[in-house]
Length: 490
Image (tube, rainbow, N blue to C red):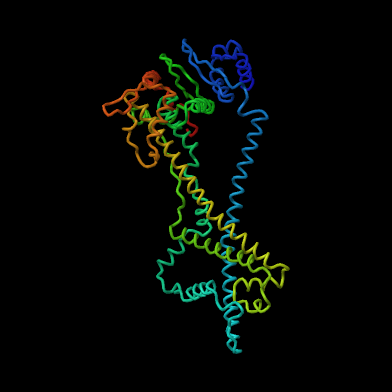
């Protein structure tokens, strides 16, 4: 089979203006069935196009030359690059998620520990000062607002009711809450792509449609499922033919129909169970949601990050403004959080103010900004993506409506099933849809009594009639498997 394929490709290269299956047979002496089987594969690999001649033959031509999509150095490099990018896409987010979790929770715990330790030391210092008759100011003018807030929080935590004060249902509900790491990832990165299996599901839908409609499909019908532009759809339907043993056929009226005998036979067909051909039922691309966290959880994460942001700003400001000007008395008093950290690090570091500025200032401050920046960018990015998804859904839906009734189409009167089919700029979206379907069939345009444009796609109507006639001519026995003549269990 490989040798036959090579012969066909070589013969196509000799026909710069294109070739029919008969031409290839004459050049290679291969059976017509083999040529018809392998030509779609060649068209897929080398980005070929199809034309229909006046005599009803299909002409394969290759305007882009014979640079393979799947073989050669270029294809190898593309595959290697694709695998590398795929690995990086999987590895980096995992490492990034671990880093975010460590930074968010780690710095929160660290700042909290520093604040509580400084409060305890401050209380102990003031108690000792009172016992010795001192004023207890400790060189920093007593407790600052920062320490006062920490004390209020600390005492409120101590006075918080224990679990014994709650009933069992509340305790169980708390245990069933989403794990913290998943909540953090959801807030920063959002949820899993709701359309991650889109290509696979689309292929399944097209195959089911082909099987339920006597093994054939047209380009407009294929576009109803994929929503692709005509040129992309033509290229990909040839790839579909290559994968599933399809071949293009020309009807008596000159319309191209893609026939799939190899995937037609099933134990039970849709035609067999319903008595009629299956109708188009395009899939719906789901919209992305910002996060599946509860509102309270997202607020809690925002507050944790705000806590880190405030402390980071506090330490950075003091490291710059105070520097090495703290006196020994201030070291010992340590009634201020910065003074407490400075005094501790002064015992192990040469320039503690620089260490504080970087580790407790710049790093958590930059992370906190970063922690808010990613969800903010993602919010607007997903908003734009959702508008694109709405347009894609609307396009497939409108394609289906136009194909089912090509005459007298007023696209503004087509009812949209839900929000997932309604872009923000609906009028602009509808105009784009008409232009794209117009690339397949140029419409005749009229205006109704209200001045709205009404389109009639005559070419689509003729193609649909030709398809119905072609499907009706297919023997129903070919769509069903035969009776069992042997059973290994007997």
